[in-house]
Amino acid sequence: MQTTLYTLPAYPRLEEHLITDVAVVGGGMAGILTAFALKSEGLRVVLLEESRLAEGATAQMTARLSAQHGLFCERLLRDFGEHLARQYVMAQLHAVKQYRDLIAALGVDCALTDATSRICAAPDGPDLSREYAAALLLGAPAELQTVSGLPFPVRNALCFINQASFEPVPFLAALLPGISVFEHSPVRDIRGHTLRCDGGSVEAAHIIIATRYPMLERWGLYHLRLRQEQAFLLALAGAPRLDGWYLDADTQGWSLRQRGDTLILGGGLRRVGETGSDGFNALRRQAALWFPDAHELRAWTAQDCVTLDGVPYIGRYSTATPYLHVAAGFGRWGITNSMVAATLLTAEILNRHYPYAEVFSPDRFFPSASIEAMMEGAIYAMRGKKRRLFTAAERETAAILPGHGGIVRHHGKHYGVYRDEHGVLYAVSPVCPHRGCALEWNDAERTWDCPCHGSRFDYTGRRLYHPAKAALKSFDAAKL
Ligand SMILES: Cc1cc2nc3c(=O)[nH]c(=O)nc-3n(C[C@H](O)[C@H](O)[C@H](O)COP(=O)(O)OP(=O)(O)OC[C@H]3O[C@@H](n4cnc5c(N)ncnc54)[C@H](O)[C@@H]3O)c2cc1C
Ligand code: FES
Image (cartoon, rainbow, N blue to C red):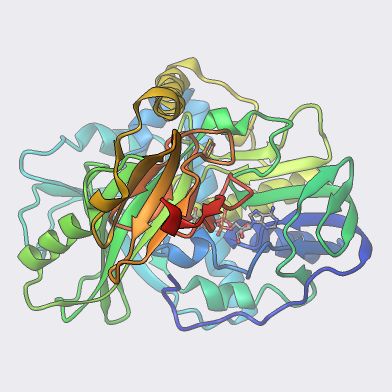
């Protein structure tokens, strides 16, 4: 769901063969910023977007321009050591400054507002003093503060001062002039330096994959190194105003962010395919408790990729493909990391030094940070495959109530069936077209979700999220 009233201009479909310096695939925050950075260096850039610009994860986010990415400093120090942990923090702080400078230089009115970022600990929550010490050691503008004005008790908060919030879409609009943009032009394949779309192709000296989930599976094994997580969000009117934003120290917990007159309450973070709890209802109960006078304007979910060790993959796509570059795995912190991607990848293509590149290198592997996440990924993949073969919870079509869905077995075959409020049935294949995992029905959003790599489909089978490239096969439900 689009969360702002701003819109970007429409661009044509690619219908020709083009030769260019750089082709950027993916027109979200990362792709547009990177295309802009390269264009600003005098390179010819073609930007190819599957649907419309900035309507992917970039449209769903809460738009905190912050270098504070949860409780991350102590973890980075432990997993990466001080040198690389400092690189990460410095890259993020530098990115916040780059935004401020760019917005001023372009004169964009994008509601840039200074803000303090706060991670709050409940009275019985984690002790923030070690994270505070780690943040100071790494050079972050951290402070431990008491917090008041929230409708629940907070022991203290670890704050990053001098952060900001802004509206991404008007900002992105100011970057587009001078870039050759093509919408409704999904890149179907890349062979060598040539990208193929339905209506045309592009030959580029360098290719940047900024599709949030890397679209090429021939190299890099990204499907083994990324998981997708989603969070639930409510926009509330009539709640007391808050300044800055607040996150619960518990990563599964709530987040609060004032956006204009609206308060955005987030929570229910989970791995895609982890169904069972209704994230919206849990959030609505929380909203009623904390903000009884507020009313709901919108409800939506947002989804992002997370790497094995929590640091994005930005750099060469694989050692075998020096002309291919990637920016992925922003882990819900895509604003500063998109700026990092734009700066790092521009330096990489122009053979310039970028002082913080090493920590983002896509071919790194830190066993202590990665093995647990790899095991968890393997368990999810096994669960998806195993359900397909043996254990899918099956029922009769008649047992599917209006507004609900589930797996139905008919003449020995499995179908994913949803019945809408008017009793109309929809039947699709419950097998993910990506790598064949069994899909889970998500009652809260009426979607079919894949526990293996996070693809999602609506109840008609339309693909909502990659890495699956195709829709689900649909069937005549009247025959079931
Ligand atoms: C709940 C939540 C809140 C968040 N809030 C914040 C926040 O406050 N601050 C922050 O920094 N980050 C936040 N994020 C993270 C942020 O939303 C993402 O990291 C960021 O938007 C990712 O940008 P992107 O350009 O990589 O992806 P996207 O915006 O998804 O762009 C990728 C684009 O690639 C296109 N594409 C895919 N495949 C192809 C293809 N084959 N050919 C052509 N185009 C293709 C897609 O259509 C899409 O437009 C949040 C995320 C979540 C889940
Ligand atoms: S099998 Fe990979 S997303 Fe479904």
